[in-house]
Length: 466
Ligand SMILES: [Zn+2]
Image 1: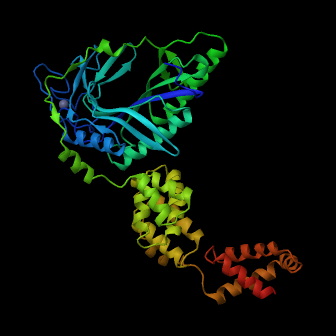
Image 2: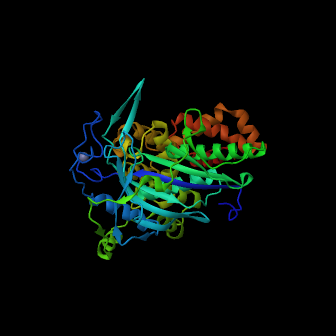
Image 3: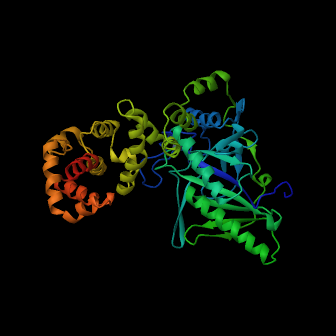
């Protein structure tokens, strides 16, 4: 390793993503469900002698979708291998994975201005979870056999920021494909990090959980290695662990080399042909991805770039936007779906589904604004309430009398009162201080309980004063 690199730091990521299938990878036990330990297991995922695995077709489809979305070269055959090691989280003493021939290879994840090359994408089963409890350890096999895809990048990222951008983009892709549930599925990663100062001596950091932690771990490790090099310590290749609580890495055992795992082809699973026909069917069912949506929002809809980016990156926001613009002006819809909707969800700490805000709610609300029936301010109050619990917006506006005051005699009355109440502001305005009249606008807004349109009020005030 070494001389081919030129950047300050070099980062590669190997991450394991749980696929949101209904059942496990090699048996029909549910992937999710009761949390009672060891309640979702059978002889296959417990590795009883004589039990035979069979592959979950959905998991293959999901992994193939990811291969297609990343322009990976797809293997002609699905071949599984046994990775042998002895540890209580593996009842069989081996993990079924793919080694010799990954399902996908040479793919890429596109970032703005750079494509992150993917070495491989493959399927494997999750081991059990170990529960440490005081002086003893318990093993829960509920997770054992859950389907994972492993995604391995080339060491081509140059900073923690770039690692985060990669993970974000990967999650966008996974969510668009609907093969991953960000609220319920786990991402785990090992990263390799090296810096120029140490001659790019490679350090592996294992067992990082969650995509935010990946950025933290890379950041920490880049700084640590730079400091060590500065202090004149001799760089060494090593394996470290990540302590999320302390926010630091620590030395671990020396890593086994791949040969130590004694891989053999899994004899209990037949080699499955991945036919062009099968791949073709999956290709046909591929959704429109974030990149395509972004291009459409920019070129066809003429939406402002940052707004288009934010919406396209989030599959659920994009879906909401596309539904809403069937009845609402695009610019208005994009503005509200980018800013107001996420603001409310953030405040309520809810996902869009959890909030139960549907396109119909946004359509009613935005139509009222678009047609001047309510003010933006009333709209904001309404969307806040929708965040708590959705309701029929039109009915509510009617019942509560929230319609914008467009009755000009009513506004005129308020304006006349305001002029009387704020003679100083009026004087200043007459003396040439344009902004002074805003004070009167404020009074009218208060009198109308926010239901008058500020522009209309200003116009009316000017007419009355001049
Ligand atoms: Zn099972």
